[in-house]
Length: 165
Image 1 (tube, one colour):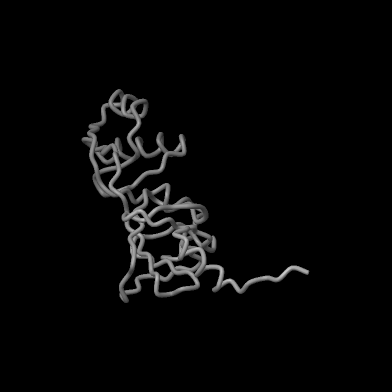
Image 2 (spheres, one colour):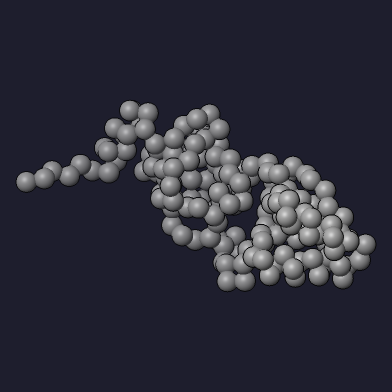
């Protein structure tokens, strides 16, 4: 006969052994404070399952419902709601693309979209993950490209619905 332990008891044992904290829930824009900071890239914010580390090195195990990517400001919780983890956007190496006309910027968006490249679209600029091949292509098309470091917030796909919508 196998005895099963209650999940809360198992979580206490895991935390006492300095193992990963299991996180299974998220709240939006909760201003009640946090215990840990989870800094994630744009790609990392799309992955809702798996192991991560907080800024101070605490291991986390994400098993979150699939409800769109994490958004900076989301608060992650497990069975022990006193251990609250806030999501922040990591600084990333990006390319900033600008053009001398709106049409050129729209054309660049089209060509990058054909390659399924994640894009952050602003009124006068595009941002994408740093890539030397794409940088060369954009420069050859007459666009202005420079390397920048900032948090990356790409557009969601046409069929992607997030909990922020």
